[in-house]
Amino acid sequence: MKIGFIGLGAMGFPMARHLSKEHQVIVRNRTREKAEKHAREHGSTLAADLKECASADVIITILPTSKEVDEIVDQLLPHLRRGMLWIDATSGDPNVSRATAARLNEKGVEFVDAPVTGAVVGAENATLTIMIGGSEKGFERAREILRLNGKTLIHVGPVGSGHAIKVLTNSIMGATVWITSECMLLAKQLGIDMKTAFAVTNAGSGRSNASENLLPMRLVDGKWPLVFKLAHHDKDIRIAAALSHQQHASTPMLALTSQLFTAALHELGDGADYIEVAKIVAKMNGTEW
Ligand code: NDP
Image (cartoon, rainbow, N blue to C red; front, top):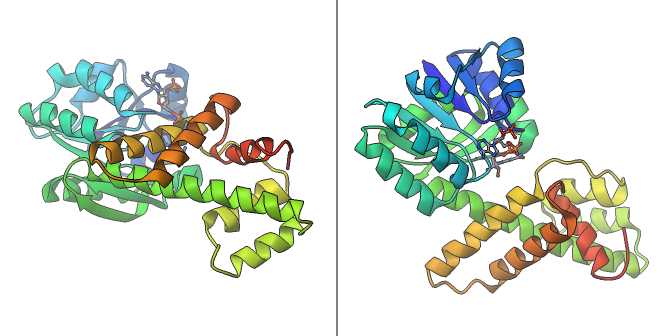
């Protein structure tokens, strides 16, 4: 299969590497050097220009937001052929992806949204969970390719549903990180050793990925790696909050989480990791970890 892969960021670079093992992958990236490196070291082919990606049977995009994906769609639309498949692995906006799918369908191109979860380590190890929105046929076609990137591939529903569940599940994580940080800070202020506080939490009903993995490394060991950009996480939660508004739903916790993450992003800046919101929790209390 010939695949045009667009977006060699933290996730896209290793994903395209796995696909290159079984497919002919042509790579394209805004910063050309990354695509050159990929072609040099990982068995892909450098696309001479964006248009060349349209010579593929399948196009995969993984870009920051649906806006950048749509800009690429605009540029490629005149060159697309009937029967092609477009897989968008971006954590995008379901409203935009439905409109994008309609535009592509007019050209006879099938679209599926296929956002991923499992972080960069999951992309590196091809153990991502991939949630796919699209027709049954689109899902089957996408699964045949994306099985090289993930262990769990789930057909969520029609186009847009992959993007919808992705932002909802990231919102759950965001709220969990925040409340766990607040309670850990309180535990510390009450004189409880951090390791003990985590041990008790993880042996009981407060346990989560935040308490088991994400926060101990930062709050106990003092390591703050950049794993997932806060800017991306804030974007996901804002999409979820907008979906809630659109549904006329009452979701005050989601609204608050969105507000807190946006405030944290303004405070910490574009280069911050998403777990650094814990620093804001401490700052709101006039202290540090
Ligand atoms: P990165 O910021 O590492 O990479 C973004 C990619 O998009 C780069 O290839 C970048 O090119 C390209 N890009 C940015 N702006 C434009 C533009 N205007 N036009 C064309 N290309 C552009 O992001 P990630 O790989 O971390 O994330 C990608 C998507 O995956 C996001 O939607 C994110 O929410 C989601 N995601 C990320 C996870 C993670 O742990 N990182 C986990 C799960 C989902 P350039 O190299 O030139 O900057």
